Length: 483
Image (cartoon, rainbow, N blue to C red; front, side, top):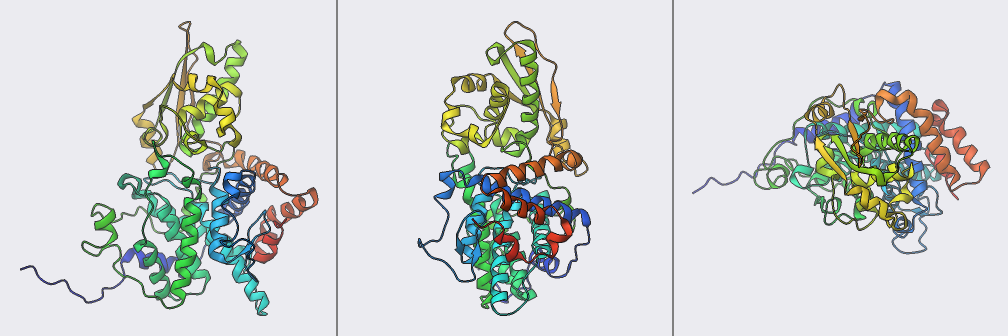
């Protein structure tokens, strides 16, 4: 007979403890991290405002029961909704991820750490409005920036060495975990309560990546992070009631996360938590597209100009070879019919063909009207991807973190263009000085989609001044975005 399993409750898994101690005790003293967090904040909110132009997104927004307004509830930027923090987190998270235009972290597991802003901003706004109503001081936007830095760090550091996609799980599991940790701290939970909350996030059912891959690619990938960050708020609120946690949720034999969902392998860590991820985050500035394609799109834009200068068009092209990294091939190298916008913004051939033909790539270019142009599919069929092991190595190198792509165009007449290479996209840390003016321009464009000129200027005055923003009460800043 086998020995009975001990029912002695173990100490919490070290992974849970490390996350809880980080959110509770670590002081962020990096001015670069705070400056970057402010830029990520405005970029992320701008992405949400642009998403409000798409009915496929807005149909999912609002309260669960139409007409519900929550007193002192969290407000949803760009709308008139005032909701409970769980539903507000879903609304904000859904908006900011809808167009695949917010920030990105590429590692063993890729993801979008600004997805956590859905839960962070909803919780901070609700807590601030509730505090004011009770005659207490509100949270400030520095509290929001601090929570953003820590959520980025938790999600990004776990992602560095641990690939969830390779076991079929979606990266939004890390959004749920990171959001739970920082939101629990914002709620004022004790160390034990935060550990309990984090354990609840790990023990939860985790999303499959089915909706990100052929033949099932679909719009859930645009609201999955909103779902994850709202679930985090719910779990943190449950932990606040004293709901118990599960200390060996990761390591428990047979029933823990490692054995059930991670092929029995424990998580590996490259570095302790600090502010590394926010400081090195990749920002999607120019193109609403899956990040592994960003440099390929920059190359395609150059090729559009070269074709125009030579009096050639896509019809003159015989073949395009994309020399790329392994992750690009695994995630977005796609042949065959593309069924919807979510399918198209995860196809590198589509994202290269459109700028070569039109000299642009916008969110509207994924819609059915543009996709019906027969030139796009004709050019897609001529594009092939080939892995360059050096590009793959540089992609994983912590000192480089490149996202390199190189395009070679061969013509029907036998001639070809010199290879066009781009290692780092404009939103990369190495191109930050070049990128920030473009980021601010993107923010201004997105504000203009939703607000009158005077309101745009009020938002800009508050958002572009680091010191002023950090001292601003959260609810006052969110009120600037109310229509």
